[in-house]
Length: 192
Image 1 (cartoon, rainbow, N blue to C red):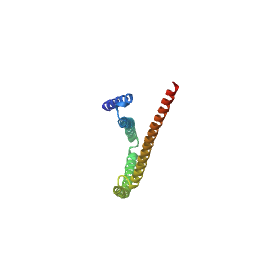
Image 2 (cartoon, rainbow, N blue to C red):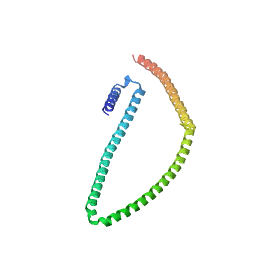
Image 3 (cartoon, rainbow, N blue to C red):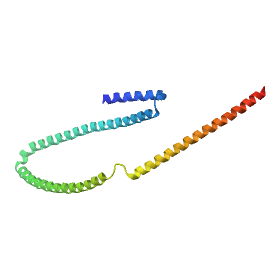
């Protein structure tokens, strides 16, 4: 993590140098580095969140472990103090309870197994159909490519028009400046 932080500091230093002396770099170099710094910052934030969640998970696991220990200790205490008093009835009750629990457990296992098998079969079917559909598609749809191409063509045409308009304005400016200069010189010589 320290090496990532050092790398991030190096990138920030490079960004500051570019911001201080933008004329030494191409615009795209500055924009690319700025985008990279933004993506790196987002990734670091995500990693910090995940790290915090892991810390929470450790605390949660510890609470669960403590609860299990408390439950086990309480069960041991009950068994050691109650059995001598109610030994006969408790032995019978435990045997009956175990039978009942075993039957219920067997029923739950059978029900759960059936449910899992049915859900997995349905999910396998759904996922396989979805995977097949998605795999048959191209990465980018032709409609998207048509729209992006049209937008690019419109952009290029608009930029070309603006450049042509700018060139014409500069040409007109040059002609007007020559005319103004001639008129100024004419009036300056007439003053003397």
